Length: 243
Image (cartoon, rainbow, N blue to C red; front, side, top):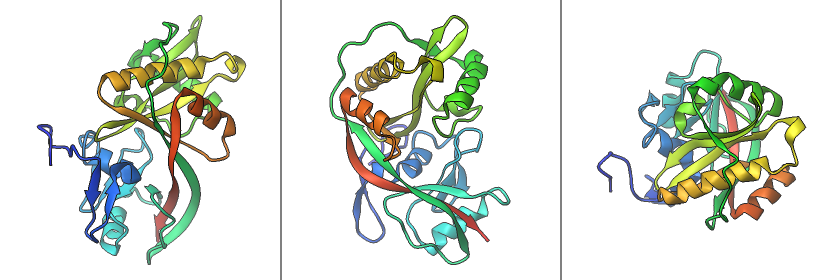
């Protein structure tokens, strides 16, 4: 079933092997063929974000044809960074560059009322956002990443000290990402305030927030649980490069 915008309105889909899986199990693919298809490059059973937006690629299913499609549009010498449900076998003709687990957490409730100590960020703030990312290292964030959704920040004078925003969008869900705080401003509740505001905005828009976090990032997991997120499942991030 499709909406008027052409994207799927179901939160599950049936694979060619007859398996029914949740779209969150392959969220990058469903974002790139759905709400973010105007950003996508690729063909057949593979898609890519432009690297200055997000360094992610996706395949519909782990078949030889999908990997052939994946290789066709990768920049020369670049690796494909895939979010996959499991640690799938390495296909012929590909090298394993890296792999690590990632927890996917989904919001289970609307948070308590937040305050007004957050501000929307715009393209005029791109320099400040990149400066903060360089210090706080929240994960992949490029010059055009803010095109994917709304971003909020907290300021101390003219210095951006915290931010959080939206990245992947799939049927009924929006991913929260780039959640980071300046090292000198940590422990002051900035991340919680920003995430709560984004959660409320998402729920008001009829979307359920979700996010990804490394299993060893215990402080972040504790914060997200406190805010109302629960672990849905573990995914594998696979970095693979065609020979």
